[in-house]
Length: 439
Image 1: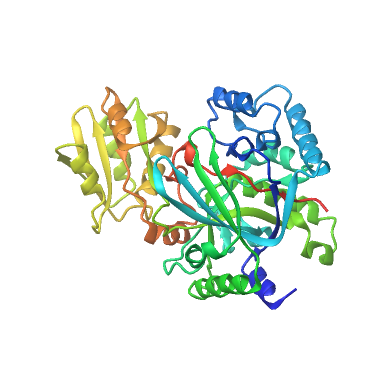
Image 2: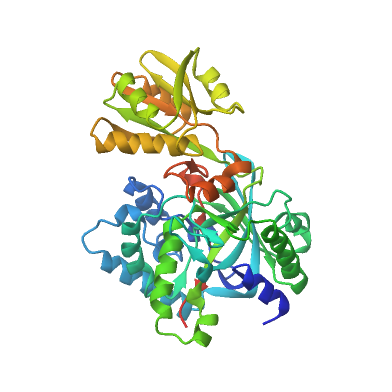
């Protein structure tokens, strides 16, 4: 192993033998959105099937979660593995050995687009437990019951295809951004529109030693700025349960390996896209809450259990509320609305470091007491429309602050579930690249 490769490995990073379809493959049909999207819309996946037809497609290599409850899941899993083996046997792929990829994704909502770096991460340095101190961590609680059905899909698969996006906190823009500046000198490996309003996807090859050294230098500098007792370097953005599944499969595999065999076994690593939280094209949106079957007094009483004090100040409208909720103040702020209007709630000495955390404790208590039910909502206006109906209330969360995101995870171990979203369903990662994960 070269010195640079060794430095990267200590930082949980490794280059990969990346598989991409050969020239002439219709990439519009090949690339399909992440399997955990459109889970209530089987018609989306049926339309994708109609579009793809018999052409090569990642649709044949994934298990859309909309179908996880079907009667005979093993039949679909067997078909996935058979397609993977057939694509390998028929030499569908070109292999880009020992490489990273620079990736650019634009969507109808963002012509600026977001940038990423395709890498493999060392699963030995990932722990999804809430009290983890590993380099790679979950940002939200991992639901253990979601792992076993996903393991059934992965455990015998010869290939992995990533929809996982992992965040780095690189305010200096030192890891990904230097390659954006020099992209015209890099080999472009694909440029394709994406189906179903997904926008456009491009990638460039990074495979030179000096480029690996640039990445190692930048990530090393980031690592050196971290608290050595709690060094969070990589935080999950999307696909935590997929990475947790890869970790669980690796834990099973390594039981039968020698120390030497463990070192470079392909299943030890997972292919992911790194994205800089400070990328201006990376949209972070708060996920709001609506409570059903509750009155103001009940909600207020529960909130008061979770802070030294809680005040509710009536405001004019949703626009004013949005501005106030996002002010920099010593109190913790969130918005409240019901039939009577809009209110700014200010908490002193709250139980959690961010409003989403405090509110989740409130909500969990109300649910346990059967005093309300809840839904998690994208968009302030939709939240307000639902929240202002009789016996409902809407809870408007502040925007997600990029500069305190990693600090919140370190302080609270993980964010409350459904704290943030990285775009709408059609903006999620599309499957494109593959990698062998069996010896």
